[in-house]
Length: 555
Image (tube, rainbow, N blue to C red; front, side, top):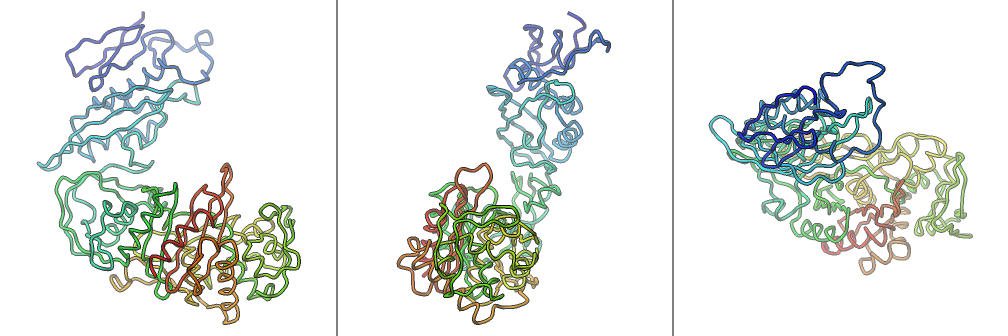
C-alpha cells in the first residue's frame, strides 16, 4: 500500500482505514482525510517521470475527492496546522494569512468543525469556538460551507478559497479582529428622538454601521471589546463598513441624531417587504433631508449605495438638457419614430410604438426612447455629463450624507453609448437616493445635497450645484412630469395624488435578466421619492405603487 503518513489526532479513537482512506473525526463526524494509494492529490513516494505522469484531470470532482479534500482541510484547520490547511486550497497565501489570524488576531480558541452532508462539490459545516481576550470570553457558533473544485494547473481537487468560508460575513481581503472596538457604539435616533434599531427597521443595518464608523469617536461614547470584521481595501471601496459579530463587553454608546421620519421609515419597510429586491428613498426637496430609506434585502444597501442603470427616469435630466439647448420644447412637435439608428445601433421603443405628429410632452409622458436618441447627433459627448453634474449635483463623488453613499455616474461617452446614456442605459449608473434627488431638484428648483445627519453636527462640507435651470426650462420640466403623473405612464400609480405632483417611470434592461429593472421617481408637495424593483418589470407597475404609497403617507 505504500508508506502511511502519520496523522496527529486530538482524540483517543484510532483511525479506521476504509477503502484506502483514513477516516478522521472532525467535530464528531467522520470525514475522509489522506489518500494512501490510487493516485490521490498528495500521494507520497512517487518520482516524476514520463512514465508516471498523468494527464490533467477534468470533469466534476467525485464524491470521494470532495470528502477527502474537505476532510483534509477541516482537520488541519481545527488542529491549528495552518500551512497544511492552506495547502489544500486554491490560494494558499490568502488562506495562510486569514487562518493564522483566526487565532492570533481574532483570539478564537477551542475550535470545533462539524461537517454536514455534502452536495456535489459543496460541503456545509458548523463552527464552534470561544472568543477569549484579556480574561473575558464568550462562545461563538455559526454555519459556513466550502466548495471543492479542480485546480486549473493539474486538475487536483482543492478547496475553492474565499474568505467567506472562514466566516460568511467576510469578503475577500477582510480579516477577523478581536479587541477594543475601533469606534465606540452609537445610539442612533430618528428626528422625533426615537431609537433606530434593526429590530424596528430591518433595512437600516448598514446605515447603523455607517453611523458608528463616521460618528462613533465624536459622539461621546466609549469603546467596548468585540469580535468584528475589519474591512479590506476592496470592501471599503465598495462602501462597506466594519461589522461587529460579537460583543465581549459593551461599550458606552454616544448619541447621533438623524433626519429619518419614523412613520415614513416604517411605511417604507412595509412597502418594500412585499417585493423581491426592492429599494426606495424619500427626501424633503426644500432641505435635502432623507426621511426614509429601505431595502427588501437586508444586506447591501441598494437604496443609498446601489449602482444600477436608471432607465427612462434619466430622461428627466436629458429633457432639461434638450430644453436648455433649444432641441425640444414641451408643447412643440417632436419626432417619435418606431426605431432610430445612431452610432451603428438600432434603438427601439417599447413594442416599437410611434407617435405621429406628437409633442415632446407626449413623448416624455409615454417614454418614447427614439424622441431622445434622435437628438444625440446634436449634442457634444460631454453635454449630458455636465448637465448631471452642474445642475443636479450628481456624479462628482462629493456627497457627504453622513453614511457611505454613491452619488451616481454619468461618464462622457460617444457614438452609440452616448445615445444609450440619454435614456439611462450605457454607462449611466444611479440608485434610489440619486433619482429621488433628481425629482427633488425639479420640485425645489435647485439642488440640495441629500443628508441623513445634519451637516451642523460635524461641520462637514456638502456638495452644491454650480448652476440652476432657467425659469423657462424648469417650468417646462415640471409640466412634463405633471403630465406624466396625470396622463402618462405614471398615471395609474399617481392617481389621486395631484395636482402638485410630477413623476417619471423607467425600465432598464439588464443582460441575462428576463425582466427589466423597474424604476419610478416622483414628487408631491414637499416630498420626493424614488424606487427600483430589480427584475420586476415596468416601473409604473412595480416601483410606482411603492413610491406613490409613501408620497401619500407623508402628506
